[in-house]
Image 1: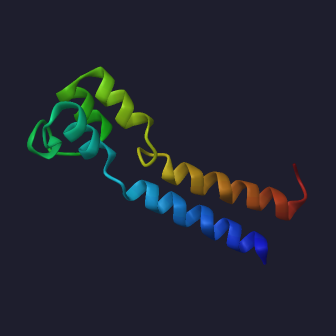
Image 2: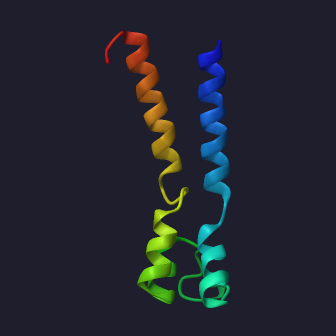
Amino acid sequence: MILVFKYLAIAVVAYLLGAIPFGLIIGKRMAGVDIRQHGSGNIGATNVFRTLGTKPGLLTAARPGEGRAGGVAEHVDRRRRCFNSGRP
C-alpha cells in the first residue's frame, strides 16, 4: 500500500513540475520580456533559445517539464513492472 502512495506522490510532483511555465519565468527574470509576445509565441525552450539566446534557452531546457515529466512517469512505470516481475 505504501508503494502505491509513493508512485502517486511521484506522479503528482511530475504533474506539478510540468505545469510551471519556466520559459515564461526565465524570460521575465533574465530579459524582462513576455516570451509569449515574441517568436512563435510558445513558452518552451526552443522559442526561448531562438528569441533570448543560448543561456536562457539552456536554462529553460534544463528545467523540469520540458519533456521530462512524461519521462519520470515512464521511469516509474518501468520500475513498477520490473518490481512486479522480479527482475532488477
